[in-house]
Length: 263
Image (cartoon, rainbow, N blue to C red; front, side, top):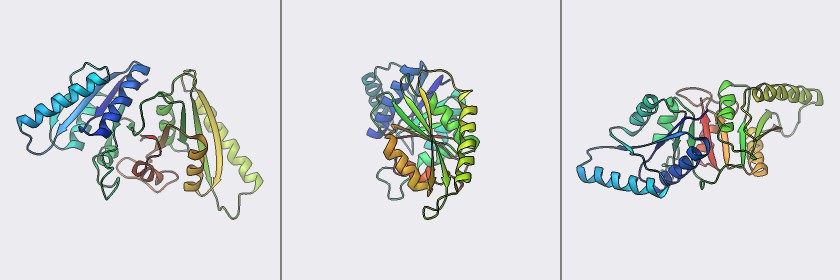
């Protein structure tokens, strides 16, 4: 269960969007919500006061009355310290790197993701409850955890599609027997996961596609039109080139919707 959500807020419009999403999810799940702002560099009293006023105004606009946490130091380090100390179940951040010429590489988001103790949600869309989600599911533990984490954010009446991509040449499709075996293996994986999911009134669906993985995932996103995409990171500290692992960077750099990452 999601019991404690932390929002890292950098006083940007993107972070305002993340806070709105966090407020919506906290109301939906009944989770406690904490807000953190990190003052970097040599911040004076005027900057601290500005942060306090901005955050209180934004919190009130979202119907929230709690006091924000304001810390001084390196943003990624303070976010990770607070996430561990508060024993959070979900960290929500906005798309801080939108104007960065390097994209996702080297951002606070990337640094936090490498060591985050909880699933991380990059919130980029308006905070209406999720109705459709897509989880890229291979046979790794982190992909399974991503699906399970996404499931906890889906309200009654919504649908989560578990997608498996069987990589093959688009010129030479797999043999029928080979594809049948892959379907059987994937159906068993989904059935095993389903047994551990709470009955929330949401629907769990499954889809298997074969071909080039980027094309398959792009076409699935176009077909499902999810508001939430769940991915596994595949390793702590690095983004591996294993199936779907290398896609994590791409979809964090150019998110088609909110993106949830789990280790």
